Amino acid sequence: MKYSIITINYNNREGLRKTIESVINQTYTDFEYIVIDGGSTDGSVEVIQQYADKIGYWVSEPDKGIYNAMNKGIVQAHGDFLIFMNSGDCFYNTHILENMANQCTADIIVGRVANADQNGQRTSYSIRIKNASMFHFFNSTLPHQGSFIKRSLFHNHLYDETLKIVSDWKFFMECAVFQDCDIKLTDVIIADCEYRGASNNMQKLQEEKKQVLTSIMPAGIQKDYLSLSQLGLSSFDMLMYIAQYPGLRKLLYRIMKIIVWVHQKLCRN
Image (cartoon, rainbow, N blue to C red; front, side):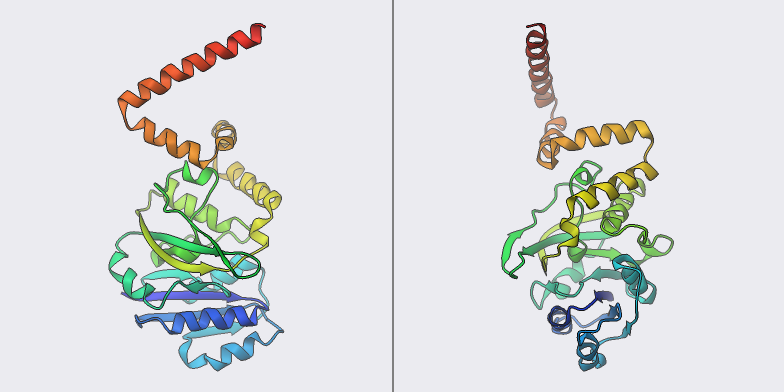
């Protein structure tokens, strides 16, 4: 099995160097490495040139944003599975590709990632998601640094370049929910992820999510989605668990009846 590893970069020279070294030092060597630089002026190109013999394809030219750069990498890819390890992100250890080779038996294989703060210190690890249903995408997504994606999924479905933050969220949701792709979940920690300010712009993120939902969902379903999403992912996980067992469903129904009764009493007073 062959991997295509894609790194996009713009003016992040030292982060790029870390990423390149984490890729070329993998013990599993059946991969192609693609680097898409957005026309950096900080010496990133010189870093790429230092490792040019380890890179199958690279280019440095202006682009139209993160997802345009990622799409450029996809077009150049020939591997069975793609993974995006953008500048500053690194494989968690040198054995990741080797350890994952036998696990790539689905359309998308999703592992965990370690997150860093602005000082580069690990602050948290993503939890293993319980399922990749619509419920999961209420308040979360899949980490692209921890996801091995079958290349065929991109044949007629590149990232939406009109979006600046949530195009990968849109892609994963469409694959998981609307295309019913086979998604395999694993506890393996795939990557160390660099802190990024853009994805923490919550106002812009919510605006783009609403834009996506408006384009792909009927108005009534969208209204329910936005209302239910206020409960939070952990609440949905609990409800999904309860829904599997008749006895727990019955108990939940009784509790809800009590809540409704109390609410009616309060309203009358």
